[in-house]
Length: 242
Length: 254
Image 1 (cartoon, each protein chain N blue to C red):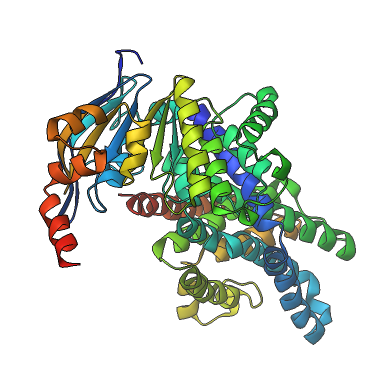
Image 2: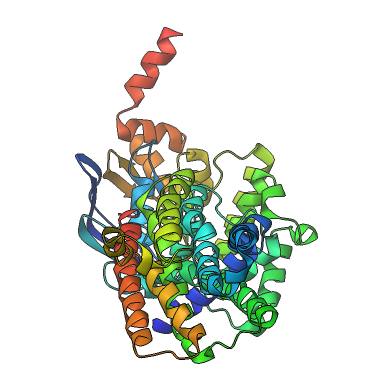
């Protein structure tokens, strides 16, 4: 049975990449938006650009995984194609993970491109294993987050609207542009309930040249967030078929 | 048709809040049989199919398909059944061929057989010339045919067809009925819901008549016509469901 599920997860992800992700809207939201955003800050203060790279990578992870993810499930529910998937020998959890994996693979491609370009152009020397340790759980976490928001609502446009609030909150409060340590203490507490804060902090450590053990703590917290999003999302999706 | 029971339903019930959509129904379907599930709109036909195919959970009762329990072994059941829902629901952006290949992948059809099987089905359903066209460009009849082809990609033992000819023109509906008839000759058990009684009369070995979630009778179309002393299955259906006086009153009022 687990083999049927694994096969289903893999092929659903591949199909989603082909039909939803490798399309101009997903690519523009996933990569063009974070680059434009960061470039705006670079033009304001070119000297600090290296400091912005972890934030740029974090934003690429956030936007590339969530942009299409937040709509595909509702879109397919509406068209009846999700029901088609459910007729195959795959559990609802398997279908959900297939959808999440589609976002993860696309996010991984986008993040890899942004990271490689940043490293080459700015002559950075990140720790690759630590980068992977932070990027991988972040990709799964934010893809699940997008899918969770999607199953919380009925309409495609509702999911996009619902997604924009936490996304923009995280851009401003998770240390993407402005360091969390320099924020007022009340905002710092708030920042630590946002998952992107741990992604940015972990990425900063990976690029620091001297990462310490707190990086493992960040990875662990990211995994905790992942479970926090994934289980309720599967439960909510199951309810749609009761 | 053999005598082995492939679908066994006992006291199956589905409730949506206050509405009792399926009310303790019981029936059996034999291997190789075309079993018709007839009833007016809202009788509970689709709710029953949804429970039997794992799209919704029963509120009560039980059913087994090919010996597997629908409550605890639904993934095993799904490997052996094909389902054609009322609305053709393949992927609009994918071509006919890609839709079939994707379904073959989901059902675990071996890699070396996928293409061959998809081509074979496209030829049987006369869609081979359009194999590279996106699903969205197909006519309603072609969409229906491709949806049936997709449900057969893994060689299922039982095929569930929910209102297969609804919304089709006369030619497309006739062609689809011929296809269903051919499937029956291949030994596939067919569970068919329809409210076109002429279609049921032509295709089904036995029919169950369902009204307000309850099965009123199960028999062959011929026996139902004989028992009710009516010439057509439609007239027999009116008599059994008690709709006959209503229809007569409408006809008198004209």
